[in-house]
Image (cartoon, rainbow, N blue to C red; front, side, top):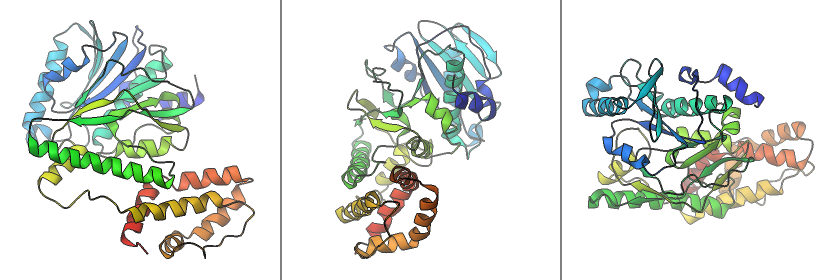
Length: 374
């Protein structure tokens, strides 16, 4: 077992991961559950029996008062699962045994999720448990699949290449019709916007040209431990985790199998597909596509980065005005001087630039070039 896993479990893992199970599974699937109907359980019926499904039934602080319907749905889900044969593993932890095993984490009544930590903490709890089980050899493969309750899992869901150097695989996805025309139209608009952005990054040659959606992840547990797991955030936890993973391994977008996602408007998280669909339905002027010019300027910037060496003098003169001004605002000359002192060769310089020009800074650059097209 790697030193990174041992250190992570000792220092950074959530308390729910302190468990021991006398059984074995090949794979683990983690899903945060908040206000979902019992029909969710039907989605797992066709999955292999060697899968442990980790359900983190969670709710934010004050959900019982502010979202009573979701709180009641949580209680119904929890009660339905515990009507099956099960074993208590500790406070709020139950191992439900049967044709398909569940590990149920109760984080909605006695110990709700702090509202600012939200779905990030829920995902982290589940993934930390999977990491502990892998350490104990109760989980045979070093991969944790992370998804959501709105996914329909295909028969071949777990058939991924699983190469050791890959930090995460991302499944392709498509939203399916709900029967509500307004929701379906808003969802398709948002999905087109997602693809437009990733396609633009791919055109520009960005190493961060991938979707950052929490329901399409298969994460290498060695890499997960190396970046200290999911950030405890109420939104964008998937974006920030992938941003970290891309710096320690490859992020690979799969061609198949494609995940079907329910089209629905939701307020379970403050950012993401559900709130985006709701905003579009309200007629807000959001999720307009970025211009071709913005991605072209990003490409110029990234091509410039690729041309840099530890020996050459820095010159911004040949760059377009907007790209040059963006670099000046980043104090790029000072950054290059620092990198040159710490990088002995061009390969290390390229890695320093790759880590600095990450997904978050790339997004900010695209927004800058959208506002400054010159």
